[in-house]
Length: 404
View 1 (tube, rainbow, N blue to C red):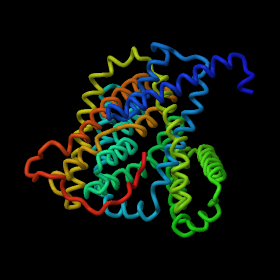
View 2: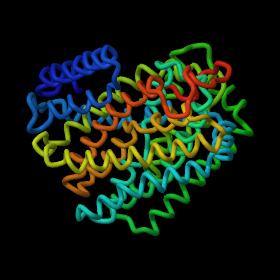
View 3: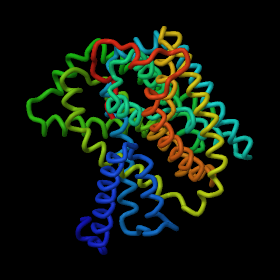
View 4: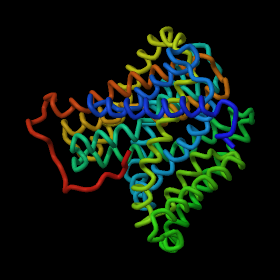
């Protein structure tokens, strides 16, 4: 029916152009050694209202694609974790995770209040400043050959805790943005936590049986099964006021073994396509003319939260017995913000909770995605005080816990 609609040719031209722009920017990002997320957001700004080449026919279509992108982002993230990894990460680093939450959500929340925003808009901004970018960090850890470093396990544990915290924050923010009461928000959180806990129990006790039911030698059938289950679970979660993203994450955690490994390989390219559309669509919603006034507050907030994130990372590494160079690398590795900050900001922008939220969040993410990536790259080059020369302590080579 889409192809027969009036103006469908124009829609396909615009949509094809968007995909080609994403492809070119992705290659450019790889060439210069920077994450692609900031470039995708900039592309959205250029193609949105007030941009250089505004889109018309394909904007609604891209919005649908961006919704699918959020589900796939969280699904792939859940597939990276096993129940044991989540349990071990919580047990060994829950104190560092709590410190990370307080140290990095608080500045965003207070900044919103100082700017005269409502408590709800300030809470959304706190979520934006809290969560590090798992995708950017994991990619750079692999590119920089630091997966085997001792501090990397600490970094990944903190990211695990942040992702679990997202399972709590997203329902709260989603219900409040929809106009629900605080009581409804806590009810939604309780339901979300119950679903997550139940999924973890099911995964631990019946993971092999579920894997056996889903497993197939046909990549096509496996892809259809996992995608169908993901969208079904995400939709059901949305119907009971639990975030669709949380539902996808829970499903990803439930699947394990060969199904999870093969599923990651099959879904990663699809995730990258629709994830790119998500970041482009976020930029489409923001008028570039509103960005200049947001530069100074975004830069100040970025400086503060980069420092608090570094302090949390260094403290977590120190508690694990990591040396000075490793603590420095762990601290800088947590600075980049990216996909989940945009996810939270996107909820607030869609709900119209605060006109300045989109420009401030976009500028903030652009600053820390680029600055954090550069900091990670040069962390192993700068001679830190008290640290001997060399690559620092390492452990036997392992596969990354998170793959972007």
